[in-house]
Image (cartoon, rainbow, N blue to C red):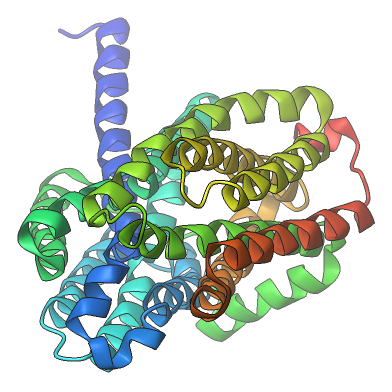
Length: 402
């Protein structure tokens, strides 16, 4: 006969296993929108007649992710998330197959757009963790899944760089298909079904997010700040491989991917940013983050021929952007606790639109003005984020810690 203590221990082990699975789902799925960044020079060599448009590939992927956030993420409130995750995995495998077999840049761009849309599986995994965990463990559960998502972002470039270096860029997409099929098999046997929490029709579910954006000034301000910072972040990462491929470096995609490991500083900064946001208010952390991001682009401008300088700049940039992300999300979750999923969708849609704009600007600036031009453009995005942040209104510490 089992005792209450034994039952509790078994329940805790089961929850930890499910959270680990959800963290893996988040990391493996979101990684797909970053695989192409260290491969840009390889794309350019495969499609030399379209070399001027290579930067459209990461831009299309990020636009697709923003569209998927808007159109697919809210469905988790209406339908079983387990089923949605499996359907998106199936669609994502098809999109990756088209990318792997792309005969020209046009096909690769449209496949990348579809990859972005369907990689929003991660946005089903995070709220799923909040549903599975009891209220006393909900924060820890969400944090665990978010750490998986963050590791997926950081390590995607490293994995893509390694596979691309030794097996070619098409093998990167093929390897992702294999990983997703294996993950789907585990999901079928281990992940329970979720319980829908809304009966709203699809159109009304989508429309409600517009009303939230109109009503909540703090949401609009945080979304714009986040979008501009992510634009600067994406501009850097979408052009780094091009810088490293040319003189004086002459590095392949593996070297560009290894910079993703350097970005682990951002992952370590995330929990610290959350603690400081609780103590001093998230706006103060966002202000510090903007200053760090601005410093990073000054470092980049002076480091066009220095690996050490680039490494230092990457650490500073990742710490700044990740700290701002955690702090902005803690702000918006306090604005309307009953609509946190939809508030988060509004924020993340703006965030990835900003990323797509940054990648597009990088594709335009790089051939015309080189690395210094890229650094100046990144700094301008950060300055605009700072100006928008200064226009905002501080919220009480009690609301920030809600």
